[in-house]
Length: 262
Image (cartoon, rainbow, N blue to C red; front, side, top):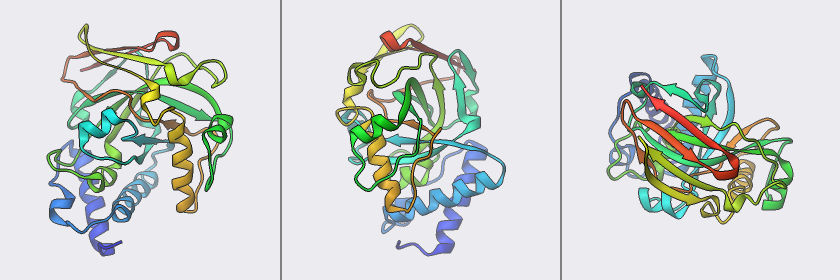
């Protein structure tokens, strides 16, 4: 890490305030151009621990920037990850308060629930598939508290990988029940199709990100635990939404997800 501990703590507090106020702060990398990825995960970690201390329950992890579509949309070329709390998970059909988020966009993803722990360092796709209990379609609501123009992966990681919320579908399928690579997503806003894709766009197989995350966690002396939800990354570009928008996504045999921003 290059940033002093007091700066890391101050930035974590600044992001916590922005989350509470639903506001946006100047880019960290504009103010601290030498900040590293290790610095950004330290900032995220302090923010995460403060949320747990305040009573929020960690239920899973999100992986971001795992597809070419998302990397091209952001100009960032490597994956990242963040944490998800229980109060950010919604069922299909939910109404979400638009004003609770900043820079609100929607991504099309698959989520995986682990049946048993998964750890690195040599975790493979087959290891990840064996550890997964089931897959479920998911929409991720992006919530960016750092100005978007010119941001780098250091900025996004610091901001909990821009995670805001997750809307889960109703269909659960084991990895041996469906070829997860070919799950489609047709994303519509107010009845008009805006984005389409297939899950193979995420690292060749959507569960590859789960194996990648287990390897990254091993570097920090940790592992993924049974029961955790892993949001595997978007296979479409993010779609901007506004207050009043109705969102619909068709995953074919894995059902549909709807939500509305009020």
